[in-house]
Amino acid sequence: MDEAQARNVLTAAGFTRHAALLALGENAVFAAGHLVVKVGREASLLERAERELAVAGWLEEAGIPAVRAAEPKPRLVAGHPVTVWHRLADAVRPAGPEDLAALLRQIHALPEAPFALPARDLLGGVERWLRLAGEAVDPADAAYLRARRDAYAGEVAALTPHLPPGPVHGDALPRNVHVGPDGPVLVDLETVSADLREHDLVVMALSRDRYGVPAPSYEAFVSAYGWDVREWEGCRVLRGARETASCAWVAQHAPANPRAMAEFRRRVASLRDGDPEMRWHAF
Image (cartoon, rainbow, N blue to C red; front, side, top):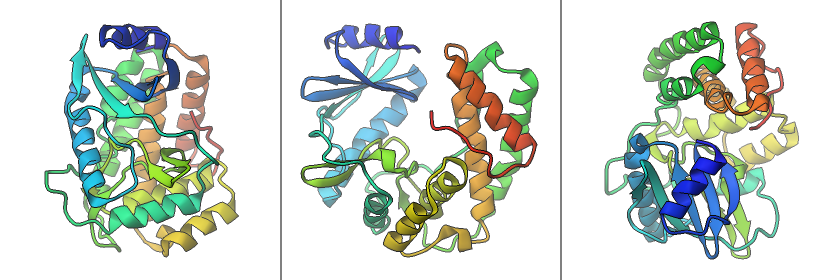
């Protein structure tokens, strides 16, 4: 799904075609007046959209600062799930690692959700992302990632956690925190799960090593949360699984974006070479 296709869905849903594009990743995200509209890539993501809206309602009842839904159910428009959200006030500053850590502490203190949350399946999207990449990526690279996915799936299932399992955000990065006039709030709730809390912590550890997050920023995150996941013997496994998924995620953009293709090849090469610190670029 490119921007033009997403705008066609937006128009079919009754929103102005001239809404501002905020992001184009797993979803196309548009600002439409006082609303934000998310257009999913395909109909198979409808269930995930339904769960994301349920999560938003649950977090609102629990008093967790998070994005709020403007419509309680998703729409299915031209084969794409569409969800509608209240637009947040403009940011007053960029989110920092301490903001993320403080929100994670609140999420990790929650009891079990009143509805079923799935496990955090880091590797579940690999096949779909490679399918969307099609012939744009080298079949040998796709086969390599599938084999790597299968190997890590068993290791992840066998992990013994350090922290008590429970609700997690699932994609815990400062970019998924918005700091408005009333303080930091969580956004992008589609990966909220019930699983090892370590899932939320390994993301920043990987960001330190791969994406250029400065060591002092990572230490600020650790200090605000209260524990460094790198001390846990399972960190290597979760990191490896997330790297596999992150590499495949970029592949879906490769057919239409040369930058994505270059980044995909860079990531695959670093995994094949066993280089844990080759710089990856956020996409």
